[in-house]
Length: 304
Image (cartoon, rainbow, N blue to C red; front, side, top):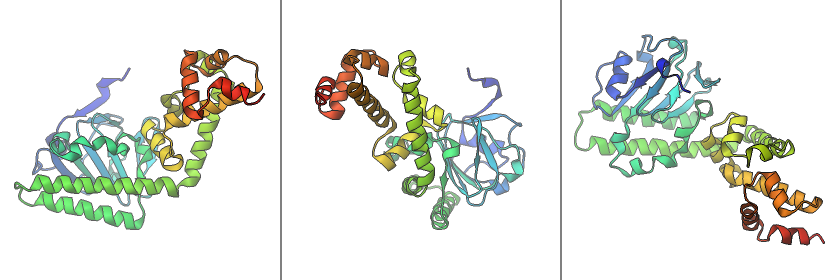
């Protein structure tokens, strides 16, 4: 159970700037913070923080670490990190090393815009901090210019067009982030290949150790936890490299294991279904036919 006594809950933009020792924001639902101008000790050592709004951190040259769960995210390369409302973070113990810029905006700021209805498509808000976006020099320049444009708009007098312009700038920032994440999935093939290899081993061991008999089918949550990755990051990475999300990847592994059992054992279809973790043999047969266009029995008979 989550210990709520050690969580600093920040529920408004005005509250976060006050905590940071900064002047009141020009708009109550959005602000941009330059952490080079923040010199106070913001939160107690070891205290977790929960925000009621979105946060996008841009750290061009940051060399510190942020703890997330049991791990740390090293910003040495610089990059972008994203937090959605209610997501817990652990501020760094060394406050002086906390550099960069952070854009905070409340869901209400974009609620009446198309962006407010399409935020779920930006899956990186559900990534762990350790899965942040690393940027090339050219990408850093693009992001820096976007943050500069947002800063300039916020420094102008707020008028009837300000919100439209700012929402458009946020959406452009998120669309560039989508593009750069896709590039990261591709360029970090060696790391991602190791992840896929580890995933294959986790699934193989799951069946070999007969965990499916005790716990049922392997779940997205199970494999993500074993890999120490967020569920959304793993699915997005797999989809980028294999065309399959995590659930589909697991289902393919199940089908391959089923084919192995159908072709090399005398177990009945029902026995195989139960060994793989299905509660009902009909569910297994339906999935098998969906994936292979033949029933389990038809597949087995093709070997006779």
